[in-house]
Length: 427
Ligand code: AMP
Ligand code: GLY
Image (tube, rainbow, N blue to C red; front, side, top):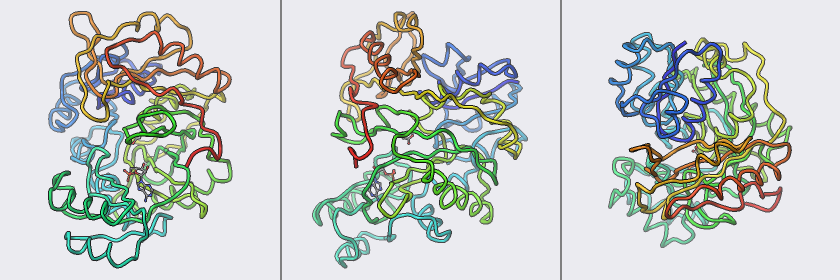
């Protein structure tokens, strides 16, 4: 089987690494890939947003399965284009992916389907948004969101009426997030612990992955601005067994059934960002893809054949195979460029990777890296993910931090407290 992976992050390196281990897989390609995917796959110079180019490559390259990492190609209709050409693809259609690409669609869908989520209102104009805020219907903090993909940046948590007014202007008047600012969402602020809940859906059924928790803010102690994710651990220390069942019953299965009934049949990874509130788990957002960096520790724990699972999902029977996971915890610590998630410099020479490669039990998944003239250079905000899976979380973190210290590049930054969250110490 020949597999194409679309994307260039740490998530895609982890997926490529795992898929390449399948005895059914003869060749893995990654478009466009990064400095790490080239170790397990052949990088193909086609942008992950070039839907027509990817489809042509899949035809020419006799690809049997395409696995889509990021959300943008899905929101551009990659899965629809592949379907039209009878190419097997793991990822939802454009209409199903609206669950992520339109926050308003997602909220209205959840309201229709009685899926637990915070109270919200939709505003079509800045005047209307200001009127809703003035009405006192929402207390403070209040959450103001642009209605589209804004690379995780179109969400503003406002502590005061002044901050809310500024958020409305930034989104709807100044259009800081472009077209995503045509409509706006005002949402109740939910308190609690945040967890990522990720399943593989086949249109009707769902295979839950092992639980995981992401560390979103850039600095230790959950300080500083939100990022794409600075580290992840699996399992999540916060999601207990009964809560897990509750999430499947009240959120995941109703979402998949609802989408099917509304002619948006969902095949692919479905990621529910949840807040564990006093009133139970509530949805903050849905993503139509695997998590990054959550995928990295999850793939370290997956003992079964990922290619087989994805083929079964595309074929409409994701529960066909028994899936085995390691009982050992796993974690990933992200090394970023200095300044990320703000402005940062690229092109820094990365050293120490060879030493780490010789350390048993440590896996480095690349994100923003490229190879040039035999050197590994940084090429993005999130640069590398250092991962391990040991008998205990403590041993896992010791292994990761020991290895991370070997890796050097100018401005490198990483959190030193990944894996230290305990029940009740956060949120
Ligand atoms: P989103 O992209 O909608 O998940 O928002 C990004 C981040 O903002 C989330 O991961 C949360 O940390 C935070 N957030 C979003 N919506 C809310 C909410 N209603 N209450 C509290 N925090 C929120
Ligand atoms: N780690 C957050 C995400 O994948 O959206």
